[in-house]
Length: 222
Image (cartoon, rainbow, N blue to C red; front, side, top):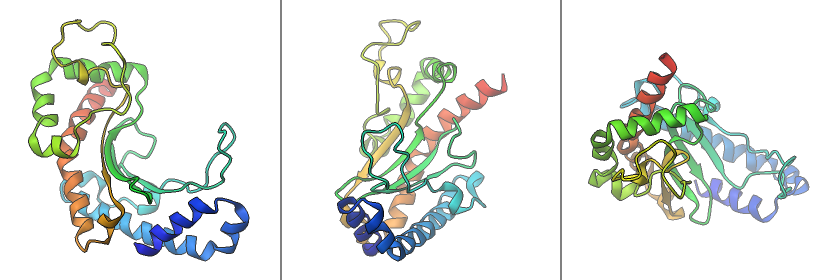
């Protein structure tokens, strides 16, 4: 893990093709380490989420090469490694489990779904409004809230149209996406038990992921 983080620190400081070509062996070693980490995490998650059993680690990894066509940042490589453990695939609207490694305290565990189309997003909001107590039981549980105090990285300033203005928990209907996350310091990954702890963090978010997936399944099956 030290070598993996060192490579990511180096690529952040030397994000160009010439440096990368001269240090490709370091990249390949870091990727192999990350792939082993993701494979181990799939096994650990499968203990409470059987659907992920048998997933190949490579299918969960995101590309390291950046698409710079529509970005002002023309750096050719990412500054992190990311993997999304979701048996439906990385582009699915079903929720899954995300591991992000990036030096400088930018590492995190996250889960849920980053993107819904408009109809599915509305269905999720309607289900939360309909099953408010069940949703609150999940996201306001002490262990969950300690790790994941905020639901949704982006949120509307007001309640979405069609919902009563006096809804008592607007913070659960305003999100544009339904994700939760927990940042991790660099030295966390030097602990002997860090993989066990990450698996526990994913286990804590499982009821949230399940709630989202039940709604998506109900909508898709209609």
